[in-house]
Image 1 (cartoon, rainbow, N blue to C red):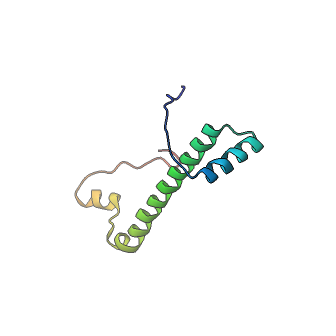
Image 2: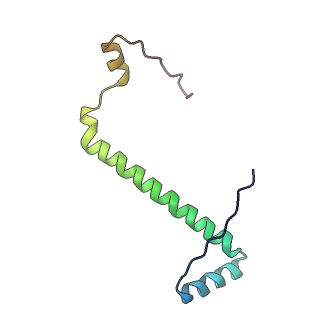
Image 3: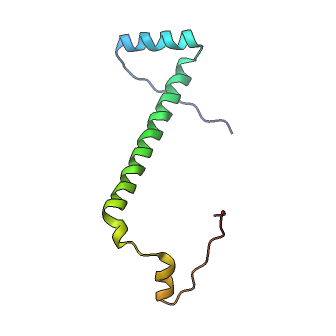
Length: 88
């Protein structure tokens, strides 16, 4: 499946632009692909950071009060389905 392409215009410091262009020319990158990859990497980094903060908050504040789902289901008389090991 081919991604739908769209234009995106930005303004940046001309020194950074020139340095970026030099790097892309020297290393054989297309400028748009280089920027696209950098943006994807930054979005991924931010998502991972957010996930880590959520996990750290859970470990610090919520783990002690968390309830095992299987035990809870059993306590209210619901038969919990067991997941297959190694499969979702």
